[in-house]
Amino acid sequence: MNFFKRLFKMGQAEANSTLDNMEDPIKLTEQGIRDMKVDLEKSLEALAQVKALAIRSRNEHEEFLSKVENYQEKAMLLLTKAKKGALELSEAERLAKESLMKKGESRLQAENAKAESTKLEGSVAQLETNVAEVKKSISKWENELKTLKARVKVSNATQKLNKQMADIDASSTVSMLERMKEKVNQEEALAEAYSDMANANKSIDDEIDKAIDFTADSAQNELTKLKEQLGISNDTKS
Image (cartoon, rainbow, N blue to C red; front, side, top):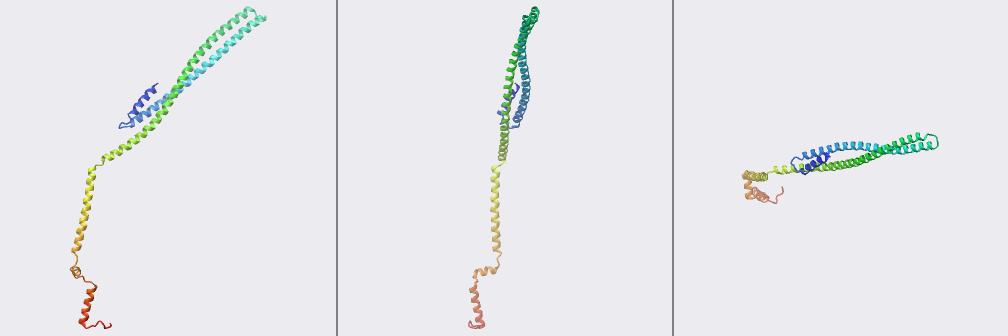
């Protein structure tokens, strides 16, 4: 049948599923499955028709066998009537002979019907085998199609990831990090420069105070000197 050729084509498509464009094997497999389903419908239709012919031949065989028995009984009845005197012997023999001839014809037709029925039953068995094989093939390739589609998804995702990885330039990344490091160094140097400038802007008074360490004790000494100049004793109450 033609579907075996399509099975071979789909086998080739599945074997080449690692090609860059994996949609083609999928479409080919889907088309092959559709074709097999069309073949299945035709096979089922042919099976029904052949089964009908086989049933008809079997029924005809049984009918002709019944006629064989019927004509045999009629011939016996005719001769029995002649024996009893209810029918002339010559007439009974003539009719009985005709009945036996009909019996022979019916037997031959029964044999032909039996042969035809046997032949048709063989065709039915072959068609049933073909139908079962097509159904099995459809089920198999539908499962294969699911697997193939899953492989396509994985392949596409992998290809996308690999492309993204290929687009990453290692040297440019290192260069970017070096520029960032240089910028940080520059920012730190700038901060140090601002600190130096802040120290440079301190007033001369700040420098004097820092040099003589003008603390609370030196202020007390100055206060004592001023009191002595004014004649103020330490014992005098304020």
